[in-house]
Amino acid sequence: MKFFIDTANLEQIKEAQALGILDGVTTNPSLMAKEGITGEANIINHYKAICEIVDGDVSAEVIATDFEGMVREGEALASLHPQIVVKLPMIGDGVKACKYFSDKGIKTNVTLVFSAGQALLAAKAGATYVSPFIGRLDDISTDGLNLITEIREIYDNYLFETQILAASVRHTMHIIDCAKIGADVMTGPLSAISGLLKHPLTDIGLEKFLADYKKGN
Ligand code: E4P
Image: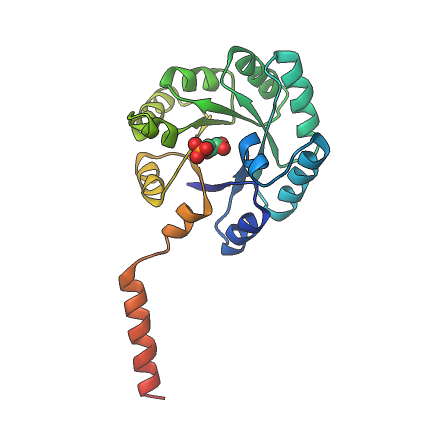
């Protein structure tokens, strides 16, 4: 399972990278705005800075909502760095643009996916990644993890190569559940990733080992 961090915060990206478990980064316009990164030139420089920190794929989202605009923006983003993945919204023109980019060998991430049907279309269009938003489904009393299960079943039925990128992961248990279902990738905040480290018995055990070592030395 690949681990992506879902942030535009460079310090958090560096922290996850230093842990040695990071496979990539996802961003979106809201995450950029949260870090105060506004304006095309600043956003572009920020993507480049992220690519210099991590080794894996970095999703960069287009703002255009029409096919021509998405193609123009996506081509510009893809030319910034070989690690850039063009992130496209799950709308008709986004699917068309996904097909365009996959035919050209440019990696894509189809975002804002909330149903199995949308995930099927993304796979048909050759998406590299599909991003079902599990946390936002949970927010409206719909089981987000169930969507990951449905997509896994459909993709396995037809051997689609599109990778299921469980997005809108909000906490550590989401990561465990996505791993059990077989999501290819998860993207979440640093807090959810760090939560995997924690167990009180680890802390108690380590404390005792160190105390016993000191007794004999
Ligand atoms: C995915 O690529 C999105 O950036 C993200 O996971 C959305 O998460 P949120 O629902 O917590 O905003």
